[in-house]
Image (cartoon, rainbow, N blue to C red; front, top):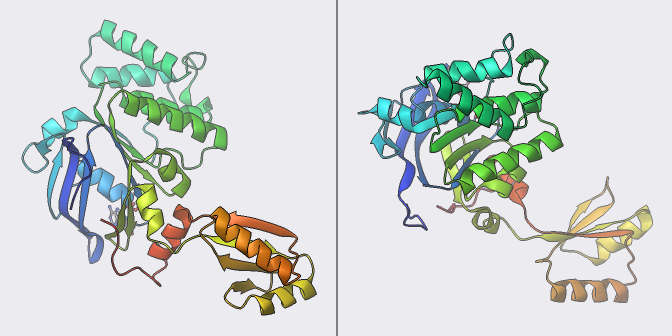
Length: 320
Ligand SMILES: Nc1ncnc2c1ncn2[C@@H]1O[C@H](COP(=O)(O)OP(=O)(O)O)[C@@H](O)[C@H]1O
Ligand SMILES: [Mg+2]
């Protein structure tokens, strides 16, 4: 594997394997996350994202693999790994029966902070995550977004330099999701390395320096969002028609297109460049075709995801 940067790796895995019974969850995967970057492990439900997080954060042992986190070998010195990392699990670690502040102080205790230091850290993090007003209320009364913010605040108590966030925005409303993205960007600006799992392609596209698509226990592709987008066929122009007869004559005139008879739309392969669009429009004009709507679609991670994970049409050589 080649890395595009010479920064030391915060997380490195080679040949990571894990099976539960006869179900192989991770079938020998390689990961490399340079320090101070965001790495996103992307995959559908059940792909093995949480298992990877649990292994790299020492909660579960791997069956095989050469694994290093924060420069420490997981097999040799899990304690040192634990000291270097913070983990926000897929399911909240927040105790709903006590207040947000009490949750924070509990974590400070676990980190053996002095009472005074614990209070100082708690106050600073509650402030940073906009939880001061709610600090004295039982966490059970918090919204999903507040609970997630408290979860991350608790993860940050020990000032970890490597953070695992397992689906931090699943189930959040759009506003809370954007808040969470802001939090993640701030962490990275502080030099923290973030290992993020998500089911949302848009999220990986927004945040991640590198993305690995997990499918069937293997890394189906790995690269920057742009690199991944390059492995799927280019974009297209979509023509939508309001009336069926116009649609039909256009479909006949434009032979090399994908037609959707239900939606009355045609997809014409196009790179979306001004030149291609102009020649397409000229051609439509001369053929007397007038669509009701024309949209330009550039490949996005959704396209990549579907190509890589639907089992069919997989590119022979994925980006590494
Ligand atoms: N402790 C476990 N025992 C048995 N099977 C498990 C265990 N944890 C996860 N699995 C299985 O491993 C697969 C991957 O799970 P998981 O890592 O949670 O996926 P994801 O987080 O991507 O949704 C699933 O098929 C799941 O049922
Ligand atoms: Mg999971």
